[in-house]
Length: 278
Ligand SMILES: NC(=O)c1ccc[n+]([C@@H]2O[C@H](COP(=O)([O-])OP(=O)(O)OC[C@H]3O[C@@H](n4cnc5c(N)ncnc54)[C@H](OP(=O)(O)O)[C@@H]3O)[C@@H](O)[C@H]2O)c1
Image (spheres, rainbow, N blue to C red):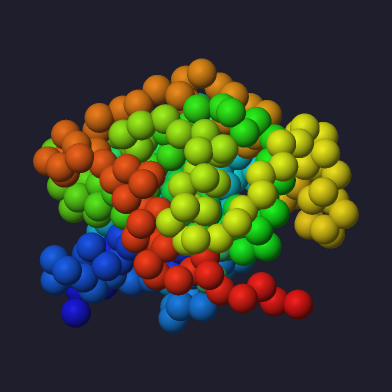
């Protein structure tokens, strides 16, 4: 049992995979989540000391996103606490081309802690474990910017990189950029998923304003709507985010997963063929 490694968000998209990588290497990390014991809650600083006590290395995913108001303050407090408690290394998951996320990266970089930043483009798993899944399940996918080119990256690759740089101080002080190996559009993605699941998926090309209205009508919380609108209007359309990085291949010594590979793996899991709840 080795609980000197903490994975904050250890049950989430990348965190759960980081945990698996560590376990494969004989490391049993402590999970940082509201349901873990000890629990960790971003909204309750009183839980932080216990979760970080005795920890040497930590992988940090902020929830819901480093771009939301309050993230900077939370990352500042957490990083200072980590330094105070003697944590030697922190790996922060960040977003490519997000100004707010870069401000959080800088807080970590200037804190004096050993660190590596893992800066990611949009995750493939947004289609199977997050906000794009509902549209796929219903068969009606309504999205703006359906022809924008995005280097979607796989959470398996992000986690493999994160687990490696977390345990290897040779990457200290570096910003690692993780993207997929190709640029894909929403239109292409919907086609690929339809083809591999044998389902009919209708893509409705709508404006961002219509998309926001749809989220409001569906009763999504205001901060979630704000975040998604921000991601579409600032992150997705930022040309910096359309650049492909080769850091995954350099660090792991193998190619990054293609979107088609992700679709094939996910289709065979059955997640896109679940019945839709009434
Ligand atoms: N999605 C993308 O395309 C994308 C792209 C680039 C960067 N990012 C970055 O990725 C990060 C998210 O990483 P992820 O997708 O791996 O995680 P995730 O799946 O969004 O996060 C879920 C995890 O967060 C925990 N959690 C939720 N609310 C919490 C709270 N109040 N306190 C403590 N833990 C909480 C959950 O555990 P419990 O529910 O058990 O507490 C779970 O472990 C964000 O900061 C975002 O900026 C995302």
